[in-house]
Image (cartoon, rainbow, N blue to C red):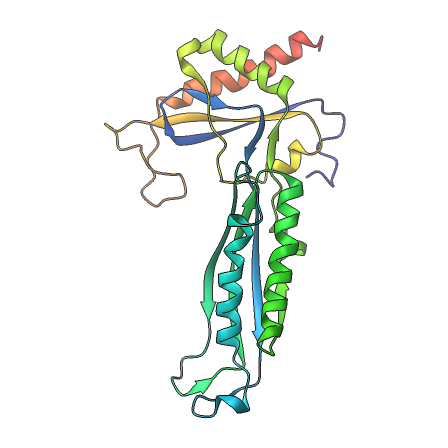
Length: 251
Protein backbone atom coordinates (compact mmCIF):
# COMPACT_ATOMS: atom_id res chain seq x y z
CA UNK A 1 0.00 0.00 0.00
CA UNK A 2 2.81 2.40 0.86
CA UNK A 3 4.65 1.58 -2.37
CA UNK A 4 1.45 2.18 -4.32
CA UNK A 5 1.13 5.67 -2.81
CA UNK A 6 -1.74 5.06 -0.40
CA UNK A 7 -0.16 7.36 2.21
CA UNK A 8 0.83 10.19 -0.10
CA UNK A 9 -0.49 13.56 1.18
CA UNK A 10 -1.66 11.89 4.41
CA UNK A 11 -0.86 13.89 7.56
CA UNK A 12 -1.78 11.45 10.30
CA UNK A 13 -3.03 7.94 10.84
CA UNK A 14 -4.73 6.15 13.73
CA UNK A 15 -5.15 2.40 14.15
CA UNK A 16 -7.22 0.34 16.58
CA UNK A 17 -7.18 -3.27 17.75
CA UNK A 18 -9.42 -5.10 20.21
CA UNK A 19 -7.58 -6.35 23.30
CA UNK A 20 -8.71 -9.06 25.70
CA UNK A 21 -6.66 -7.87 28.70
CA UNK A 22 -8.56 -4.57 29.04
CA UNK A 23 -12.14 -4.31 30.26
CA UNK A 24 -14.81 -3.72 27.61
CA UNK A 25 -14.87 -0.24 26.02
CA UNK A 26 -11.76 1.07 27.79
CA UNK A 27 -9.27 2.69 25.43
CA UNK A 28 -5.61 1.88 26.06
CA UNK A 29 -2.44 3.20 24.47
CA UNK A 30 0.89 4.83 25.26
CA UNK A 31 3.31 7.34 23.68
CA UNK A 32 6.54 6.10 22.11
CA UNK A 33 7.36 2.40 21.80
CA UNK A 34 4.12 0.45 22.03
CA UNK A 35 4.45 -2.86 20.15
CA UNK A 36 7.62 -4.80 19.46
CA UNK A 37 9.29 -5.38 16.15
CA UNK A 38 9.12 -9.03 15.12
CA UNK A 39 11.31 -11.23 12.96
CA UNK A 40 11.65 -14.94 12.33
CA UNK A 41 14.69 -17.00 11.42
CA UNK A 42 15.44 -20.43 10.04
CA UNK A 43 18.93 -21.91 10.01
CA UNK A 44 20.13 -24.98 8.14
CA UNK A 45 23.22 -26.46 9.78
CA UNK A 46 25.07 -28.81 7.45
CA UNK A 47 27.63 -31.47 8.32
CA UNK A 48 29.16 -34.76 7.18
CA UNK A 49 26.75 -37.65 7.62
CA UNK A 50 27.94 -40.74 9.43
CA UNK A 51 27.07 -43.52 11.86
CA UNK A 52 26.72 -43.02 15.58
CA UNK A 53 29.17 -45.88 16.18
CA UNK A 54 31.98 -44.03 14.38
CA UNK A 55 31.44 -40.35 15.21
CA UNK A 56 35.06 -39.48 14.36
CA UNK A 57 34.33 -40.10 10.68
CA UNK A 58 31.59 -37.47 10.57
CA UNK A 59 30.66 -34.04 11.90
CA UNK A 60 27.57 -33.66 14.04
CA UNK A 61 25.03 -30.90 13.29
CA UNK A 62 22.98 -31.92 16.34
CA UNK A 63 25.82 -30.82 18.62
CA UNK A 64 26.36 -27.66 16.59
CA UNK A 65 22.66 -26.79 16.74
CA UNK A 66 22.52 -27.48 20.47
CA UNK A 67 25.51 -25.22 21.15
CA UNK A 68 24.02 -22.48 18.98
CA UNK A 69 20.71 -22.62 20.86
CA UNK A 70 22.44 -22.37 24.23
CA UNK A 71 24.50 -19.41 23.00
CA UNK A 72 21.43 -17.64 21.62
CA UNK A 73 19.99 -17.56 25.13
CA UNK A 74 22.78 -15.18 26.14
CA UNK A 75 21.85 -12.50 23.62
CA UNK A 76 19.13 -11.16 25.88
CA UNK A 77 20.43 -12.16 29.30
CA UNK A 78 24.05 -11.09 28.79
CA UNK A 79 24.16 -8.56 25.96
CA UNK A 80 21.02 -6.44 26.31
CA UNK A 81 20.17 -3.57 28.62
CA UNK A 82 17.89 -5.04 31.33
CA UNK A 83 15.60 -2.02 30.86
CA UNK A 84 15.28 -2.64 27.10
CA UNK A 85 12.92 -5.61 26.73
CA UNK A 86 13.83 -8.15 24.07
CA UNK A 87 12.98 -11.74 23.18
CA UNK A 88 14.88 -14.46 21.34
CA UNK A 89 13.02 -17.78 21.26
CA UNK A 90 14.08 -20.95 19.46
CA UNK A 91 10.90 -22.83 18.64
CA UNK A 92 11.98 -25.29 15.97
CA UNK A 93 14.52 -28.16 15.95
CA UNK A 94 14.34 -30.76 13.18
CA UNK A 95 16.98 -33.43 12.66
CA UNK A 96 16.89 -37.07 11.61
CA UNK A 97 14.59 -39.83 12.82
CA UNK A 98 17.18 -42.61 12.89
CA UNK A 99 18.81 -43.56 16.20
CA UNK A 100 21.98 -44.90 14.56
CA UNK A 101 22.76 -42.20 12.00
CA UNK A 102 24.29 -38.78 12.52
CA UNK A 103 22.32 -36.59 10.08
CA UNK A 104 23.87 -34.37 7.46
CA UNK A 105 21.58 -31.43 8.31
CA UNK A 106 19.65 -30.01 11.24
CA UNK A 107 17.15 -27.17 10.94
CA UNK A 108 16.50 -24.76 13.81
CA UNK A 109 14.31 -21.68 13.85
CA UNK A 110 12.45 -19.20 15.98
CA UNK A 111 11.51 -15.58 16.52
CA UNK A 112 13.05 -12.42 17.95
CA UNK A 113 11.45 -9.20 19.15
CA UNK A 114 12.54 -5.77 20.36
CA UNK A 115 11.11 -2.30 20.94
CA UNK A 116 13.61 -0.23 18.95
CA UNK A 117 14.95 -0.55 15.42
CA UNK A 118 18.53 -0.35 16.71
CA UNK A 119 18.09 -3.24 19.11
CA UNK A 120 16.01 -5.22 16.65
CA UNK A 121 18.63 -5.21 13.90
CA UNK A 122 21.40 -5.82 16.42
CA UNK A 123 19.61 -9.03 17.42
CA UNK A 124 19.23 -10.01 13.77
CA UNK A 125 22.96 -9.69 13.13
CA UNK A 126 23.95 -11.45 16.35
CA UNK A 127 21.57 -14.38 15.76
CA UNK A 128 23.21 -14.99 12.39
CA UNK A 129 26.70 -14.60 13.82
CA UNK A 130 26.10 -16.94 16.76
CA UNK A 131 24.62 -19.72 14.63
CA UNK A 132 27.27 -19.55 11.92
CA UNK A 133 30.24 -19.33 14.28
CA UNK A 134 29.01 -21.95 16.76
CA UNK A 135 28.48 -24.30 13.82
CA UNK A 136 32.05 -23.75 12.67
CA UNK A 137 33.33 -24.77 16.11
CA UNK A 138 31.87 -28.22 15.43
CA UNK A 139 33.22 -28.26 11.85
CA UNK A 140 29.78 -27.63 10.40
CA UNK A 141 28.45 -24.86 8.17
CA UNK A 142 25.26 -22.86 8.54
CA UNK A 143 22.98 -20.69 6.45
CA UNK A 144 20.53 -18.39 8.25
CA UNK A 145 17.41 -17.02 6.54
CA UNK A 146 15.37 -14.13 7.96
CA UNK A 147 12.87 -14.14 5.07
CA UNK A 148 13.42 -10.43 4.53
CA UNK A 149 12.14 -10.64 0.95
CA UNK A 150 8.88 -12.23 2.09
CA UNK A 151 7.71 -9.37 4.35
CA UNK A 152 8.37 -11.44 7.47
CA UNK A 153 10.04 -8.62 9.39
CA UNK A 154 7.80 -6.10 11.16
CA UNK A 155 9.46 -3.03 12.70
CA UNK A 156 8.45 -1.75 16.16
CA UNK A 157 5.21 0.22 16.40
CA UNK A 158 6.13 3.63 17.79
CA UNK A 159 3.38 6.10 18.65
CA UNK A 160 3.91 9.76 17.85
CA UNK A 161 3.53 11.76 21.08
CA UNK A 162 1.30 14.48 19.56
CA UNK A 163 -0.97 11.90 17.94
CA UNK A 164 -1.13 10.01 21.24
CA UNK A 165 -2.18 13.18 23.08
CA UNK A 166 -4.90 13.74 20.49
CA UNK A 167 -6.17 10.19 21.01
CA UNK A 168 -6.07 10.61 24.78
CA UNK A 169 -7.98 13.91 24.77
CA UNK A 170 -10.68 12.66 22.41
CA UNK A 171 -11.11 9.41 24.35
CA UNK A 172 -11.47 11.19 27.69
CA UNK A 173 -13.85 13.81 26.28
CA UNK A 174 -16.00 11.11 24.71
CA UNK A 175 -15.85 8.30 27.28
CA UNK A 176 -14.60 9.88 30.51
CA UNK A 177 -11.30 9.75 32.35
CA UNK A 178 -11.93 6.29 33.84
CA UNK A 179 -12.31 4.79 30.37
CA UNK A 180 -8.85 5.73 29.15
CA UNK A 181 -5.62 4.18 30.39
CA UNK A 182 -1.93 4.30 29.58
CA UNK A 183 -0.95 0.66 29.09
CA UNK A 184 2.52 -0.93 29.25
CA UNK A 185 4.32 -1.92 26.05
CA UNK A 186 3.19 -5.20 24.54
CA UNK A 187 5.56 -7.75 22.99
CA UNK A 188 3.08 -8.45 20.19
CA UNK A 189 3.73 -6.91 16.78
CA UNK A 190 1.75 -5.26 13.99
CA UNK A 191 2.24 -4.66 10.27
CA UNK A 192 0.63 -1.29 11.03
CA UNK A 193 4.14 -0.38 12.18
CA UNK A 194 5.16 0.24 8.56
CA UNK A 195 2.70 3.16 8.49
CA UNK A 196 4.09 4.60 11.71
CA UNK A 197 7.51 4.79 10.09
CA UNK A 198 6.20 6.99 7.30
CA UNK A 199 3.79 9.47 8.92
CA UNK A 200 2.83 10.56 12.47
CA UNK A 201 0.54 7.91 13.91
CA UNK A 202 -0.89 6.30 17.00
CA UNK A 203 -2.09 2.76 17.53
CA UNK A 204 -4.46 1.96 20.38
CA UNK A 205 -6.37 -0.87 22.01
CA UNK A 206 -10.11 -1.13 22.61
CA UNK A 207 -10.85 -3.39 25.56
CA UNK A 208 -13.20 -6.35 25.07
CA UNK A 209 -12.66 -8.24 28.33
CA UNK A 210 -15.92 -9.48 29.80
CA UNK A 211 -15.62 -12.57 31.99
CA UNK A 212 -19.39 -13.05 32.16
CA UNK A 213 -19.53 -13.48 28.37
CA UNK A 214 -16.29 -15.42 28.18
CA UNK A 215 -14.57 -12.67 26.22
CA UNK A 216 -11.20 -13.29 27.86
CA UNK A 217 -8.87 -14.80 25.26
CA UNK A 218 -6.74 -13.38 22.47
CA UNK A 219 -8.15 -12.83 19.02
CA UNK A 220 -5.59 -15.33 17.73
CA UNK A 221 -7.25 -18.16 19.64
CA UNK A 222 -9.96 -20.48 18.22
CA UNK A 223 -11.83 -19.77 21.48
CA UNK A 224 -11.97 -16.02 20.81
CA UNK A 225 -15.32 -14.45 21.68
CA UNK A 226 -15.86 -10.72 21.35
CA UNK A 227 -18.05 -8.65 23.65
CA UNK A 228 -20.14 -6.91 20.99
CA UNK A 229 -20.94 -4.04 23.36
CA UNK A 230 -17.57 -2.67 22.32
CA UNK A 231 -18.64 -2.09 18.71
CA UNK A 232 -20.46 1.27 19.11
CA UNK A 233 -17.74 2.52 21.47
CA UNK A 234 -14.99 1.61 19.03
CA UNK A 235 -16.80 3.08 16.03
CA UNK A 236 -17.64 6.32 17.82
CA UNK A 237 -14.11 6.73 19.17
CA UNK A 238 -12.42 6.11 15.84
CA UNK A 239 -14.78 8.42 13.98
CA UNK A 240 -14.44 11.20 16.56
CA UNK A 241 -10.64 10.96 16.50
CA UNK A 242 -10.69 11.61 12.75
CA UNK A 243 -13.40 14.29 12.90
CA UNK A 244 -11.71 16.26 15.68
CA UNK A 245 -8.33 16.05 13.97
CA UNK A 246 -9.79 17.47 10.74
CA UNK A 247 -11.57 20.28 12.61
CA UNK A 248 -8.52 21.21 14.67
CA UNK A 249 -6.33 21.33 11.58
CA UNK A 250 -8.73 23.35 9.49
CA UNK A 251 -9.68 20.62 7.07
